[in-house]
Image 1: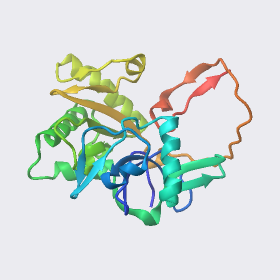
Image 2: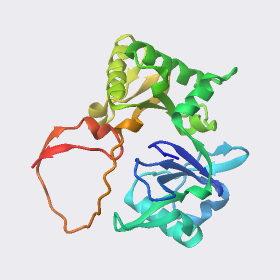
Image 3: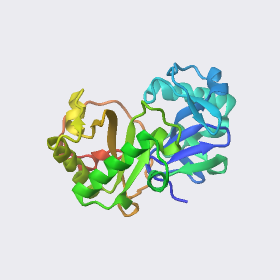
Image 4: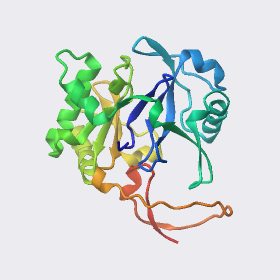
Amino acid sequence: MMFLDCDILVTKHGFIFYTIGYEHPDQRVVSNLKYIPREYAKLFNLEWLKHKWILEGRELVRPKVLFSPRVYQSIIKTFMRYFPEYVYYSNQLQKYIISVPIDLIDRVYRPSESLKRIMNKKRRDPLENKVVNLVEELSGKSGISLKYFGVSGSVSLGMHRSFSDMDIIVYGLENYYKVRNTLILLEKEGLITMISESALDEIRMNRGLYQGTRFNINAVRLQEEIKTTPCLYRPICTIEVKCRVLDARESIFRPAVYRVRV
């Protein structure tokens, strides 16, 4: 089974992980922990959002900070003590990483399949309707088929709240840039409002408001765009380099790829 970036994994312990990237150890999936069953929260030295989420009757919590070296190391420390099966020593990277054993995966939520499921529902809630309407607008104006779209996040899992964001996925590099250009057109037509709260937002141009709800558009590689070249990485020293970016088109993916000249 192939796992793509942004696929969501629900494990037998009830943890919810988001797949990271496209290269994974044998029988494992490199991923990031996002939701934790409330009964395990006390084991983690983390701050939690006040909101709660419910998946199939189980209450879940989410860390306030998802992506930081401190949080990552804290999660690894807890996993090593209580759930060591989720920690893997990577000879390739020469360090411990979070990865989910395939035999502990209970369910997989793929963004493309989640969107199809929502679109086929006879009764959708208001947020699901917004997701479908926004995707149809983007597809229609960009000319990109609906089959290249998906939805991730809490909406994908069916445990969203009224205040949840819409996490839209576009499969394929060229498809993504066509959709991103379409955002500019939709803003001119008054259908969306782009959000620019930082210099990074101005560069990415992938966040906005649609009918009062925040959304973001992210890219996932098509299978034919995945090129894996196994390498061994060894830290040598810390250096400061000044370089010129020659091509940043693949910076939209995880991991980001830049062609540079030093």
